[in-house]
Length: 150
Image (cartoon, rainbow, N blue to C red):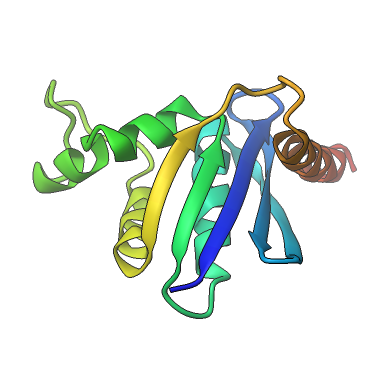
């Protein structure tokens, strides 16, 4: 199984507001950057979208090491919260509805295809790939912010 290293970040100007995500995939000597965004979204949706975009770009099942500065994404997977929400009909333990169900469904399906391990990294701490993902995400969010002004 090929091993891919993935770095991700999401950004949002306002919450909700225009947002973007950045993803870097590394396999051997190959690097691929992905980015995208939405006109009216949240930071958490962009963090999830970054991971989904990266996993969706893989052409075969891989071992994937995901580095994200999103506690929301990393903890929800590593602590089993997302699987718990799904098992309870997308309800949190306090019976409140889970948020971003559409994206969690996509992410959980992709995690079942690949062998994925999530690692939390401190954001804005000088880690080069995390900084690059942040720059991609912010640029995308500004693209959508510009579209809103016109």
